[in-house]
Length: 246
Image (tube, rainbow, N blue to C red):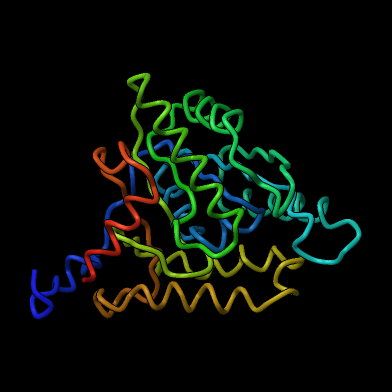
């Protein structure tokens, strides 16, 4: 392809919204709040549609603020948020904040969780997220899905955006759910005191409507990975996606 024959926009971003992924859902959040900032609107929409949604919070969140009782506070916040979002089950694995590392033990634990819930769609942070815990979570879940595939167990794999734009090929319309997403975000007072996350997240959701009809006020972006992509590394797939721009 010559430099004057670059891919058109529709190869890079959807121009229409998508239906909800198949359930049950299992969401892996690096910290308590990432599930809400990243995909609260879609979780609300799934709950309304009768889809069971499950949440695993990977770390204790101990470094996300200065309060002496921060770990307990964040645990209380995620429990309240999960209730508002209609989440079916919540697990907190309490790995050290900013200390989440790749290990075969964690990969196996994730694979077992996916299998035990019979999850049809599994969600993890996008590969271009900035926080290292976000990227490690993505690598762990990716490896777990590959482990399950060797046992002839397949799932739909989706990455979601938390703090920055990532590759997306699925956009979920959350126009109707936006007010309740805002309500859910306010629950995380311990985090909102650290930065204006609520405004930043809504700006990200607003920006994802750039190629959508005017009646879609906010959308959440996801990337659904194909079976062929899941057979290789997340690093290779990310490079493959970026190459589409050139």
